[in-house]
Length: 272
Image (cartoon, rainbow, N blue to C red):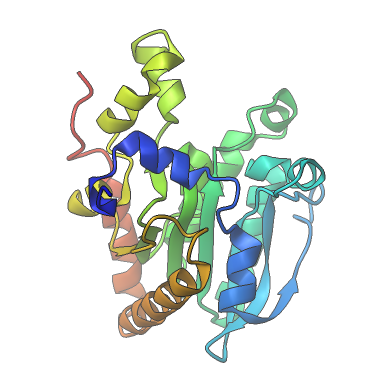
């Protein structure tokens, strides 16, 4: 059997999208206690794609948020397949500002194909909502930890990905565009998606080598096959990462986040 780290990028993409892969609410149940979800952005309405609220991690009060895709048709429609509208990002912004007000660490979990591209989302200023998240998250004084648990796509993922430490499950992906979208642009056909996935350097091991990702959580042949072991490994790394960033001053944390953003794209391989 091929070792996990030797899997082709396209196979990692399929694992990141696996129908039985644990989703955000599974991690909420396995990692946190006393979860109290909060709803709405106090401007337009509720967005089921973004879920968040107050919880406890190892007994410590925290704020958590993440995209949830849903499993069956009813759930996927309810959660819009994990693709947020502007009100979803404004809800995450509201939660981040709540964490800042009460001095609570923030945990974000990324699993989305990208922000919802519908005309209604554009009319409600989708790009502005994402940009505001980037600005506010970059200057939060409280610790922020982000984890890519499935598919991290484009600005829809980055909107809650500005953090002191970025973790990825070993079969998750993180990219500026989907392999199919990249292939359609470069080769005018989605049939080249496998080739595009290699060129995008979207896997956890390659992103760690580039300095974009801090920690990769081994999930073996897939988090859906050994969810308890993955939960335990992720819990241990989140706890250690929280201890590491808590020792920094707020100024050091903000500078680290800024430098992380400035590195994005500076050393990525060309797609020729």
